Length: 336
Image 1: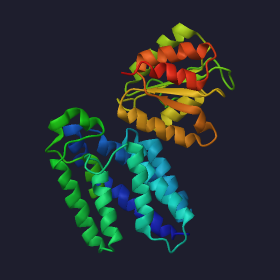
Image 2: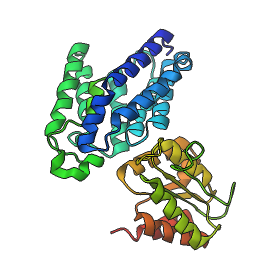
Image 3: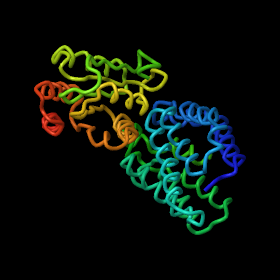
């Protein structure tokens, strides 16, 4: 399925210009129920895609969509990167499996369902899904594009009456009611090596090791590095250890690209256990693990355990040569 280069280039430019024009508005929406950086993050991601415009335009359309999605994952940060990235990557993968007569609404449905799984969310949770599913329904009915756009706008506006059930806004409870979800509104508007302070990796062991590796992921680089220092003092250099904290600018948040590099830094043939703090950290960690690809991704587990206590007890188990399953099970015993 080869797309005209001008089509891909045109789509990239329209998205870049639209996000740039609405960046401040998206940030204002996000400040009400989030951390206020949604517009800035999306603008950064679109600019990164635009910078790759020439090479993207030369790819078959499914490959271009998947590459654009990966670029967003690596540059947007926060939970938005994996969610929007998953949407486009899955569209590319589904199109690659289909022929040119494929019904795009079916392709889109598969991609939206992948986003729902990634974010562990459903329609009605006050997320971008509350626009994606209505848009899919309109496309499945062969509605004119103008009607689809109006459906997207109405659906985004309806999120104001919803209580947030997922993401950082969920911590506000009833106070999230009355505010349009910035992710939904964005649809309506349709490093370890790079930042040493915000994203660091320390592993005295490189290559293969007999012990399970430990990765600590936090929205705060200071928290992530502090816990890693505590673990290192307790178990020494017997356990491959790395951490990822903050977004690509070193601010509060998480970043799938940074987490991927942390996993690489703590890699062990015995496996890697990942410990996370808040929801976005888990979402980005899942995306990073997926980007590892098989067979290595099967050797990485996210632990459902308290960040500090879990990492410490897991490292102690790992230092004694315990298996990945044993390390994870021991840490998760600490969960309420």
